[in-house]
Length: 430
Ligand code: GUN
Ligand code: ZN
Image (cartoon, rainbow, N blue to C red; front, side, top):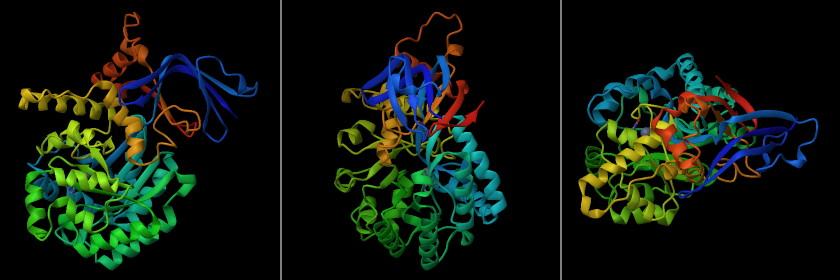
């Protein structure tokens, strides 16, 4: 049955433009696509459509979290110094527990539920090195209704013994998982090749991953230039290379389907490499602050024309809420101004942050034809937000969409999410 949705429709058109229809209407086809969007009650609905009246509520596109770690989410907020110490002390021990598929299932079920409850309808997530745990994660994602890009973390060096595997085994694991899960359920689930980062991969492994990516035309995700200490390790391990990015470039890992997380410390030459190969950036501001890694120079990277999306990077990020991540993107960009007032740095606006969390993320994953905004022909992926609770006096303070977005970003907007839909089907109800 078709659905007609009435509500206050909010959607990003570009980093500078918002669509806001109050009231607005969506017609959703039986197969979960937006058939019509407009200001009037649509004509094409027919008498046997289901009518959902959310007149006082906001209809917001599902968020796209392009970088996070499934096994880490219960550990977010545990601080142990910078990236390298934190990985050793906190993260690797919990990832070892994923040798048990039962543990993986408990984590994965909770993880996807939490994401959906916070309005995230698309996630790109690292699992662990374990093939079975990754299978379990796919099954849980399938059941939850979320859109997901999932990958087993690939490592063959420089990590605890139980978290590395021989390259040949890793290549086979990846091929099997691709065969089974890539494009599953009409493109709702995807496999993503996930070399953790250069220090924990031999060059042969990185090259092997590049070959698999080419053969199967699948996505790749990894970390790049996150902290100064990390870069020092990388350049010691890979002393023959020009810079950090050059390693990934020479291994064939920079493609139009690659996202690189962090990118805090890139030289101009490296920015060009990313731009020329069509690589995308996952901006992870809360994680960059939490681990004291640094602040990504957003305007410089934006100016280079590299597409950028937002990643919570849980558990170095401390919340799966994309409202929280938008807030950190804005606040950390303000600090760049204090560091160098003469540079006249313009902080990220709430409208831009909203774009990064929705359509920008979809573009970074090359799925903007499918999701990321409320547009005719796209999948009906959205949340219903009870904004009346923000305005206790009923005085309609937030009738300007940019104020509304700002209020949600700074007021823990995730608390007001009532329902979430993917492909027109309800996948979360408070
Ligand atoms: N670099 C390599 N692994 C990780 C990880 O798990 N989290 C973060 N933030 N950076 C990494
Ligand atoms: Zn990460």
